[in-house]
View (spheres, rainbow, N blue to C red):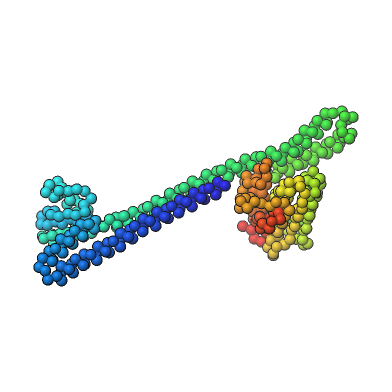
Length: 396
């Protein structure tokens, strides 16, 4: 959800900048069109003064032309012999040409104009210094404003990504810690129970359990603790991959789950269909078993103890991949979570921590260079596909 909010903020910011740029450039275009109208008006006045039979027409046209130029906004400074300023229009400051200080100030301004545009005329008669029209001055800011807006967007995006990554990292570590505590809790509680039984006299133990039987159960719990420790140790590194038999992994997973189905949920039908002659895959048996176990446990949780069907299948997808499919008849994944279902902390369970599927993705894609994905929503539960490269595929 946080990622979605950041995406919305960045999208709104981008659209706002785009709208502003379109409005700003639109105003500049309109200003240039107005300049074209001014030039046309100047041309008409010149033609009128030249072609009119009235002797006063040229002078009248010059006065009108002067007024048009004055309203154009183009800064103009006219100087004569000895660099004396005798006329100035559209200056960015007020100046009285009869005051020597203002004369010098206008001359300095004229020199700055000459840095951009060479003056026109004869310095012994009249030399005209001119600058850019207001539209050009506004247009000069466009690249800087664009670059500033882009830089601001990039900085905000980088900040958003950094905040998001830190949040995801914290969420992942929190979820991982909770998952570790959860997995350790069961065998530890069991060990505490066996310890209490050992402290009882033989006649007070249920079913007359002997020390040999209790010791065997303690050994099984210790093996579970060792397996959990090994899993979390391997998930934090890049373990060496070996050729493994996927059928053996799935057979072991089937035996493990069938022995626990009575207490996992009533009315659940577990089906395994493994294709013949599956090629061996490069992998780590401990981690790959964990990833597939998480998928099946996720399906069990989806059924919520109400019964249903879970099917696990494996087949050779093509010459370079083997596909494992886990499908359940539960309610499926809500549309709003489908794109985030593999993110740490995202879960459909009221008391879930959202770490199982994230771990499975880490194992399948990060360790085994395969791919795990949520299948299409067909309205009849959830389907997960795990594609693993075979030993014949070159792995990077």
